Amino acid sequence: MSTRVRTFAIAAGTAAVALAGLAFAGEVGARWGTRDPVTKCADITSKALPAQAAIDGLFRCAREEITYTDELWLVEDLSIKVGKARPHQGRNELMTMPDSDTTKAVYPLQGSWTWVVCRDPKAVKIGGGNPALNCSRAAVTKAQGACWKTSFGTWRCNMTGTTGPRTSNLPPPAPKG
Image (cartoon, rainbow, N blue to C red):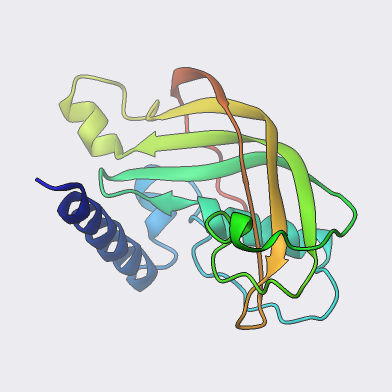
C-alpha cells in the first residue's frame, strides 16, 4: 500500500470515528468510563491572544481524540506558559502551524501534560484483563509549541514533546462534572 493511500485510509478512519463521537456527545467518554474528549474547537476570533483557559481548550481540542484503533486519548495535568509575541517566520513555520497568517505575531508555548490513553473496557475484558483498569498514563514534561492566528481569523494552539515511560493497567480519570 502506498504511503499516500495509507495516509488517506488513516485520515478517513480517524474522521469517521471523530464524526461518530460527535454524534454521541455525552456518551463518548462514558464508553471508556471517563469524560468526553474535547473535539469541538471554539472559533476564537479576538484580536488579542485568548485567555489562559481558552488556550488550554484550544490545545486540548488539537490533541484529544478517539483513534481509528478505538483508543481514547485525553490530556490531563495540563500546564502551559505563554512567551512574548514574536514575528511569524514565514514558510519555515507553515507546516507546524497550518493555515497560519504570516502577517500576525506568534506566541511561543512551553508546557507539560499527561497523556491518558484508554482502551474500550469490553476489549480489555476479552483480552483477559481487568476492564476497570483500561487506561495508561505517560508524562510529557518538556513540550514546546505556539499559538497563532489563522488566515481565517481564528486562534489555534498546539505543542509537542517527548513522552516519558508509560504506566499501564490504571483506572480512567474520573469524569469532570
